[in-house]
Length: 258
Image 1 (cartoon, rainbow, N blue to C red):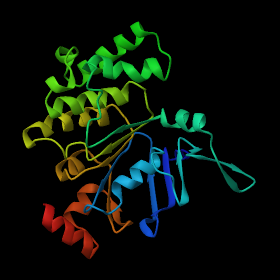
Image 2 (cartoon, one colour):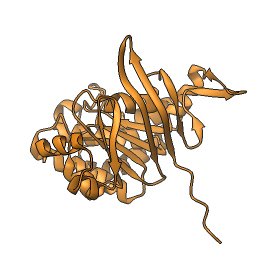
Image 3 (tube, helix red, strand yellow):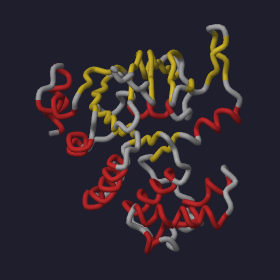
Image 4 (spheres, one colour):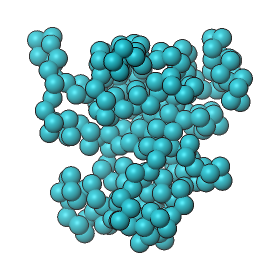
C-alpha cells in the first residue's frame, strides 16, 4: 500500500498584510511538515517577522489563511465565510505555538526558574510543584541548570535567550517560531543558542526560524525560503538554494551575506 502523505502542520495560503497603505506581505504561501525545520532568510523589511507574527496571532491578517495542526488560526469558517474567534479561543490557539523573539522579554523581577514556571502556572493552571520540576528539566536541557536562581540582569544575553527558549517549551507547543533569536547577541554567545536550537530540531520539534545564520540554515534546515519585498522569491532544499540559487535576487542577497 502507498503511504498517505501526512498533512502539513503549518499551511500559509495567500497571506497578505497591510499597515494602512503599506502592503507588507503580498500573497505568501508556505507549508511546514511535522518535525520539519523551515528556515526563512531575506533582507530587513522583507516581511519575515511580520509573517511569523501572523502565525502566532500577534498580528491580524489582511487576506489569506493560516492553519496550524489542521485548525484555522484566528478564524472559524462557517458556510464558506470566516468569522473572528473570541479572545479566549485565540489564547488557546496561541498556547500551542511557542515564540522566541530577538529581545528576550523576560520578567526582570523573576528568576530564570520563575520565568519558565510563569505561563504553565498562570495560563495552564499547573500545580507549582509540577511546573517547577518541568522548569528545572528545561533549564537543564538548555544548559542552565546552575542558573535557575539568577535574575535576568545576572545572565548574559545568550543565557537570557536560552531561558526564553525554555520558557516557550514549558507550554509544550506543537510549533516553535524563532524571530532572529541570535541577532541581539554578541558573536561569541550565538553558538550556545544555536546549539540548543539544533538539539530541538533533532528531537523532532517543528520549527520556523527567521535568521541571518546561513550556517544554521545549511546544517539544520529542511527547507530554506528566501523572502524579499513581501513575497517568497525562492524556496527549496537549503544546500541547493545556497549553492545554486536560481533567482537573480537570491544570488545578489547571498553574495552579500556569504
